[in-house]
Picture 1 (cartoon, rainbow, N blue to C red):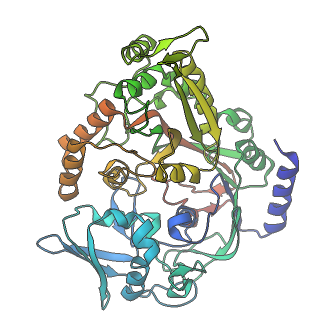
Picture 2: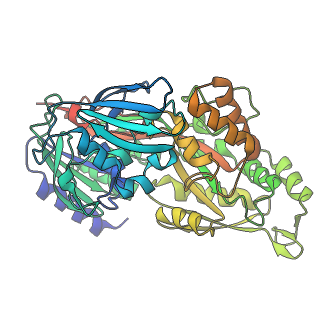
Picture 3: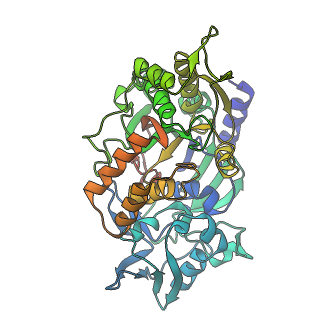
Length: 498
């Protein structure tokens, strides 16, 4: 570990956090810019800005900046009544016109979650936001809980771009130092309930070891995403509380289904059979129940199909499939076909610190069946770039299925007709497209379970493990609620032990 970096971070935090009710938060995610489409997940979790709707821990969509909504008889026009008397952090007033301005920006139209919707027009009328569709979307309100649809003051924009981040949330930014630091003060004109946190500091700390040291030494009050490897020493600390919560996130291999090797479904299944998920879950995550037998975890009860053949570890089947596809093992222990070695390149990123570790384990497991896997640890943005320029073979990624609180929104984004940056790549399935289209109009459990079956049979992505998140906090912090949807850190609910 870089001790110099650790000392610097501690000094920065000590200098910045002399206030009695200041909260020092650390997590792995960096600030990548002011646009909600780039870093909205940070601003949403820190409650700097808010959405029209929110979600409770049961996944129910609740009013937020919109107090109610209704749809027309043909379900093509939605009206959202905007909450009155809400102030932005520049003291301007929230109204329907400002909401429409936000959602009609070019960056939102082209890069936000809304780009997947059949939107004809977004307009306002008095205190109502009006969204007109060209076809039915039964779960439209859920899309408006996504971080890319955060609502900002009109004074946030210059020429349609965000130059100041001015929201309606309980915390008002006083300073941003990209990509690592956000400082904020309590916004006393927030429309919500009383908030004890007077000052807030968020620091992006990529190293799990450094985060563990900072929470242990008292240089942070809350540390998100602590790996199991660090928990033994932290559990012995009488000044710390530890919470571990299952979240709706899957670690998976994103793959290029048009790749010369990976377009063969037998190869995709051979890779899947060669991976010992139980060993990964037990050895790295310290929880065997996280070994993924299908894409969706059991907590997503409306999508987790108990009746499909589970993904399992089976070396014999893996070797059979590889042989049937014409690959033969040579003296060096690797597979060859027509004189060419079965070599694949995998990229991953350290934002989720367990990913590079899991990648190394997968590399060793695939070597057992003769596949030579090369690993490159890079920035998460490389996954998107390589998807777009079609140069990606494999990527080990971590994907949340509930940033749109109804998983259908993310599934359409990832496995719809055109695939997605964090989902399928060059993979099409007519049954999947048809099923997703029908679910847009009306929920159907049978169809949802069929989608899970298709994903297991076709493997446009290969699930490895499901997820939990461990959050460590100082015992002086009370009422810390972990959001399984990863939309908010719920910092405004925190109380301080006096």
